[in-house]
Length: 64
Image (cartoon, rainbow, N blue to C red):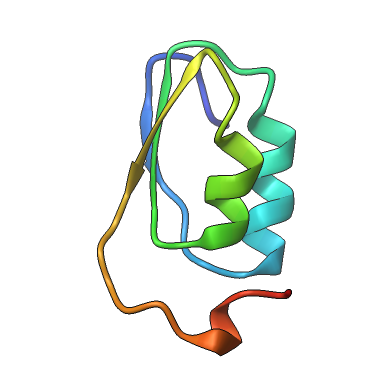
């Protein structure tokens, strides 16, 4: 249902990180997210612009 040229908001969480992984091949897509998983998945995707929502980093937010 997501088409090239769209702007989408992806919430935080492991399921959303998996969704972001599936989006890696998209072109002309803008993703806004607070999720570290999503940010990591899309960090090197050339066709996707990624906007990070601000907030406080909590140790529970990261799987390391």
